[in-house]
Length: 184
Image (tube, rainbow, N blue to C red):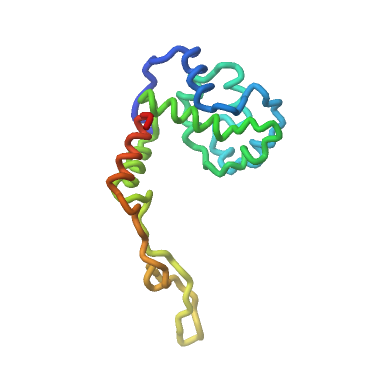
């Protein structure tokens, strides 16, 4: 199951539209003329039910509830290609981020792994702790050399030790505050 919770009817569509407008600020989805440049550059578009262009069109039509209910808003790669390609500065990425913020702040449907990701950031300061990586090496054999994998860690690659945020307690408090949508 992708979602933790199902959509409880908390806000009306007009309230959702107003909240979306306030969140995206200077970007205007109504200016989109559906050129498709955002969708053509989207690396996640093969996984979307709705591509960036269609997401903006659905916002124009007031279909925000359907978007907030969908898995699509959580499948964005956050590469900003759609934002860079948009000739009208509509910024589909910002629209998707605003939809995610609405879903999260209203305690609506969020992906199961999302809370694990947040917990890891709160605990370690990073999404994933450093792991060993595979690299090619040549191993001698009777017939000559054979290529195989070896596992390397940061030390063997002469990489610096990973660092956490300097004041982890302050960082964690700030992130928790941001997740709750509190002002400073």
